[in-house]
Image (cartoon, rainbow, N blue to C red):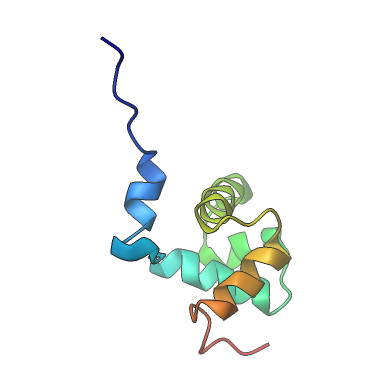
Length: 88
């Protein structure tokens, strides 16, 4: 008998019912900083975490959003209303 495929843990964590994306306050802050034009190294400083942790968090977040780049992630976040209060 073949093992049943389980959805990725990140999709389970980041997706609510009906495919809505749910992000943590840190992820929202990171997206806001990216939207304001900050580089990932500056995002790390703003979050108080290492650049390696930031890169991993952004990679997971971009994957959950279906974005290949930071620019695409910010555009998707704006479209989905995740950055309604972010100011460039």
